[in-house]
Length: 155
Image (cartoon, rainbow, N blue to C red; front, side, top):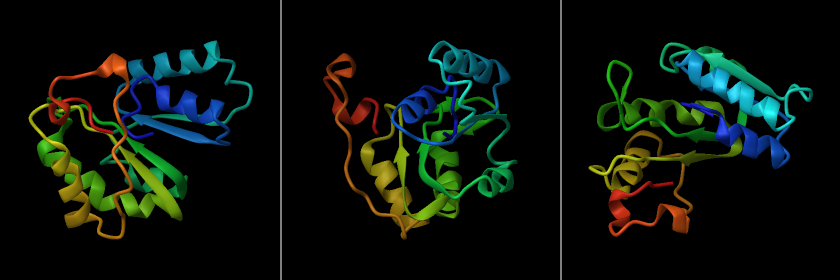
């Protein structure tokens, strides 16, 4: 769970049957909220979640060592001054993504940047990780309805 923030994907994965989840975010505060959410959901005793307060670009080796992974969720901020700008940094993640995945693994790529359409992610995968293939774009739920689907959350 890269750019884990409050670790919602981790909770969903563990409740869905995942044995282990690694949450990585450079914000210790966000990860503390994520740990608290795991406690509230009764997921602490199982010990299946790790929380790493690291910049993923500086800790890729450690993240890789904990893998390989069945699924990698990439849900970065669209813009976070000094750490991540989707338009220039997403390619760095995509380029390295195959090194984290099992042979039959998959990635869930998210993009919440209205200025970048869905073709932005498709093209990054083609250009920087051609060994990965596009399966489908998930429809946003009614609570995330938008008059302009290409500017809305893209998963």
